[in-house]
Image 1 (cartoon, helix red, strand yellow):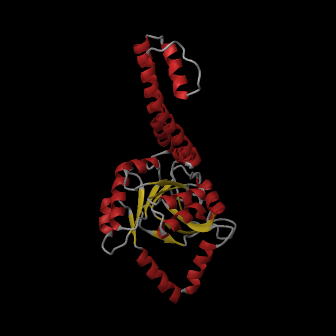
Image 2: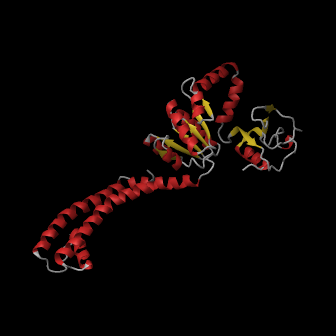
Image 3: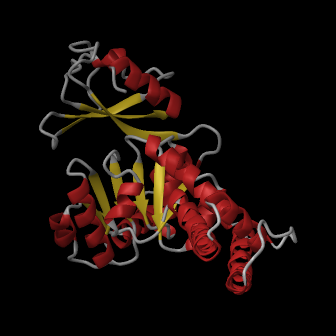
Length: 338
């Protein structure tokens, strides 16, 4: 439930009973005493408010009996109304509802962002990497306490089941660039992939794979890539043993404080102003710019590693470059990539 709906429902729960009692009071005085609408409304208000003003007009015995009943019912309704409103404000529910409303407004302005479903250990690493590299992220998490911690850190987070289509829509899935299925079980990630693919056919979906042999099911469900953390962890442990210097270099690049260095891909778009120019004009091999490590050819499978400086820049290819956030941004700008 978003903040706006929650506020509306809480207010309706208070105002509807109050309006019913007011309506019954006005109608009763009009039918029993034959008073005008305004006199009936005035008498109803001072009766419910118990302010002690005198009667608008002399009351008949049936009118007095009706007034007694109205006072007894009215006190109960007013007590409920004031108690509910006070609890809504004092317990922080109103503040939380307004905060959720502001968060939803921010999410609705996002486009090209990433959705992370689940914020366990894997999810947290994904979230931190996206934030470090300046990507917009929305988290969908089932644990309300975790959602509270995330929002306190300034991360946009929604509470609920990531397999719920309405919740994914609230996370802006139709405008998102990618989705991470980082839930703790394979069936949950399969359901998320199915829901996400149905809501946005152009979305890139990367899912966590728990059990061996599930990769095919995840891909058939809509995931573009299935990642096995156990396999990655095993390869990392082997690399730590046999190539520690290389692993240490990558670690220092990823975990360095201050400047954030990453290996990123930069597509060469059709309208690039550098079409046909030599790669050396942007390669950065002399320092001061992002270093182009490889070029993925237009077939999407073949790589030209450590490409020659005189290689022409060709639309449809993808440059694999390493550098700081600013250097990579400058490279995108030169190539005409938003």
